Image (cartoon, rainbow, N blue to C red; front, side, top):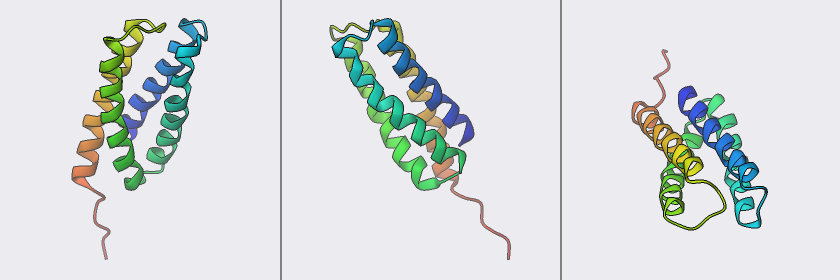
Length: 109
């Protein structure tokens, strides 16, 4: 889960970079909401909370779809930012899927 958290942090950083590169244009400020949410996901994944992994997995799938749709839309944010977000979100989703699939290791009695 830790590696997935790092990809989520990369995605959050790209969200903030997108706002900065766009010159803090009004259309780009909405990227700050997922950036803040992704930092919270990282904090939960760092604590190895499996329920956070489930929520983050769904969010990464949705974030991937959002990045794809923004690649084809007119936006003040450059396409390379959305391409990076898409890559980071897909990598995080794949790693989270693996972590969820494995589940928590059984405790020994």
